[in-house]
Length: 381
Image (cartoon, rainbow, N blue to C red):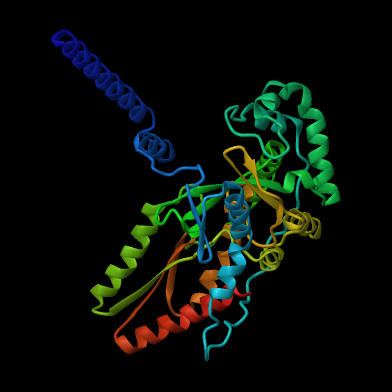
């Protein structure tokens, strides 16, 4: 027994030393890359989130343990989450809509022809361990056959851009309910993660690169948006807000703020409003037609533990887990800053701080309320 303890302790000590050495090397290799750094930190965490179905789920006033009923109700909940948020958002009383902004004309944007070399690179960079979408086209197959299929896939993608039509199979998402904490019985405590067909993600990646390159070269995104942008992050957002607050305090002014976290942010994107905002950013008619088709006839099924729900239409939101989703959401909330009026605002993705300062507390609070009402109007189009 004593020998067993000694060997066990030696083994435990060796494992700990090996882990320490491994992560020391990992951290050293990503010291200048914040994304890789935090990915490494997350890999060390004991992550309690799970894509497994719960043992039970609350449906209205009843609780079910039937997994088939769970996935059907998860699907219904996720596909209508954006509508529920819209209905729950009150229209501010006694407040007028913000005046229309007089923005300078934007540089026009049109899609450019996709090159075979770019498609080949995307296919070769596919993660073979990722799940296939509802079309069951495995990423490993596409990765191994990249040199053969790159040319016909490129022709297919360019045909989509020219015709403004996307294959319907590419608009069908398998959704996994991911528990994010709280009451395991409550569907609101689960986040929908979309698993899209591999070719859809390849296509979105190439389209997204064209859009991002255009936006960054013409400084389209608001200067007060720090989310989903290269060279921006939590640190830059925090420093900007702190500097404004400290400046106000130095002037002996009152300072007040409202911290806004949009519920169901990605799910509540109104497609009609988003297309209008793309139009105002100079997107060509062909691009607008393509995005109109991108949002049309989208469906989703919940998939978990070998079960698959029936399909349901999705008429609001951008798919969580898609490549274009974060960019489109940034476009959707880009004009929020224009509605802030006399107040200051800063955004990190959907997390927003609205703040203002002045010598009179009553004036500060009045301006803050007026700005908040205007922002609510902006989300209602």
